[in-house]
Image 1 (cartoon, rainbow, N blue to C red):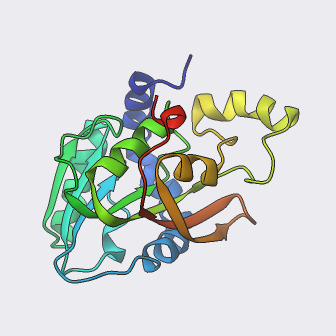
Image 2 (image 1 turned 180 degrees about the vertical axis):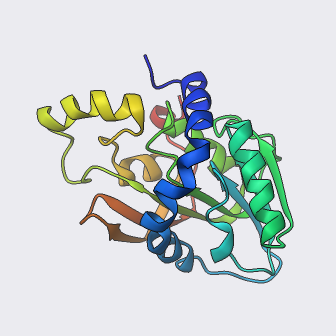
Length: 214
């Protein structure tokens, strides 16, 4: 199976030199819209999971404590350079989103932009986000999602065999994933390409269901 942690580390390391040129301008407004949904307060402790080269950094408040992770060492190096250029203090680490090296209830906000559609097991990543969030902590998600109203049809599943190998899964559904992980969705809006890209804001409520946490 191509969609594995090792394959993601390899391919995104390879994408790093051209990542900004391809992704920055195309998704800039979607990032801003997503982050603007968060109820920011000074002094918040914020974690960017799958932060890539740090394209979210310009749109984040300056009065928060920032931490960032990515699976790719090359992406983290580029994120650190961007943080220096922007004069942002960011604690950036190479880390698997499915196995975060942070204590329970450590963050006020977790941002997951463009990661749930590429993770081999997004439910594991969401379970970790739930674990490291404080009570009523906010989860900020922006990604590509299949409609929640129905599962992907045969054509989309066939196309997904190609897209998931080179870039992203296009069959995942936002609400089942987030709600199954113990989150309540507060906002859900399309931000790009019709309803393909959506920005969701959720807060931590119950425990992940056993089906999703396995």
